[in-house]
Length: 116
Image 1 (tube, rainbow, N blue to C red):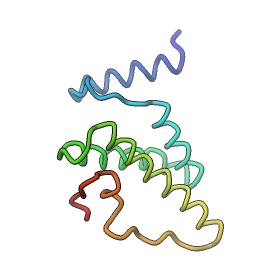
Image 2 (tube, one colour):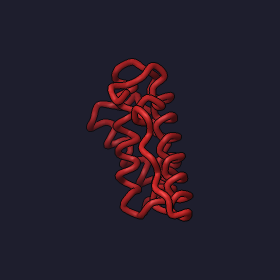
Image 3 (cartoon, one colour):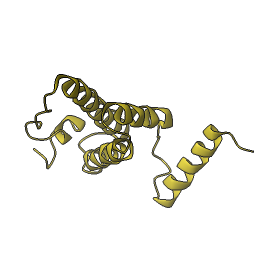
Image 4 (cartoon, rainbow, N blue to C red):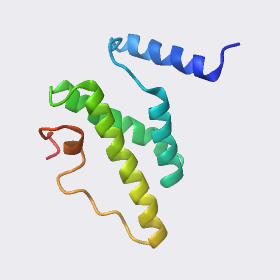
């Protein structure tokens, strides 16, 4: 029987191959860590939503040649992690998180994005 780590590695490779993204390096532990932060800082269903949106933002930045794949992914995950943690802090104070000026997609890409 395969371990959870082996199963996730295999699943990741299968998904990447299905989307013709074999050359993309995915840090599974970093994605799972971001999901954990979102789940515990916002609500559990925020985990897949957060990772999807961070991945989409990274893909837009990378696909438009605004940044490399690894830079786009790291920046998008950093934005999502920071926003999740800020949400939890603001919730504990009873305040709402204000919308980001110009969106957060620009943070994931060095030279701006359509969200700006």
